[in-house]
Image 1 (tube, helix red, strand yellow):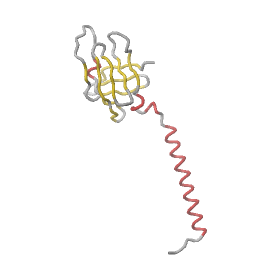
Image 2 (cartoon, one colour):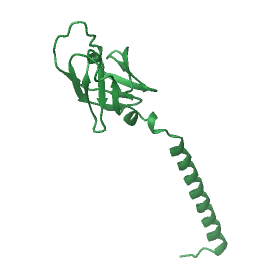
Image 3 (tube, one colour):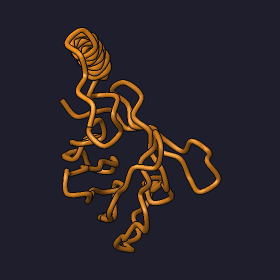
Image 4 (cartoon, one colour):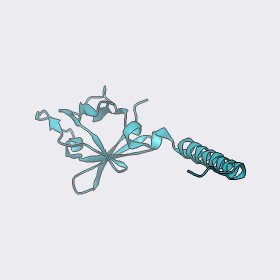
Length: 136
């Protein structure tokens, strides 16, 4: 086996150190520029709508991948997943009470997207059917 001369080893060491420095810089800037609130999996967590208002829809997303809420009349529940930039609401379960004068649009939701402090809910055709504000 042939031994490398000192100058070649030194050049290789400097080159590796330079690459390590570039990798550290690019990794740092990438993670620094990413805002956790832009990640759908974390941005959706919490309460949306007014859970204490009669006849008003609200929903809460938890970090265990579940959600629960109300369409203003019926209780809603299910499991959510991230699908690209959207939240897939999966198969939504619901009670089936009749409530006169309550718009139960939230039960038709299949996906949601966080836009600032609003949760925009769409139906299975991708049509926006309503929004809920983030509960402060």
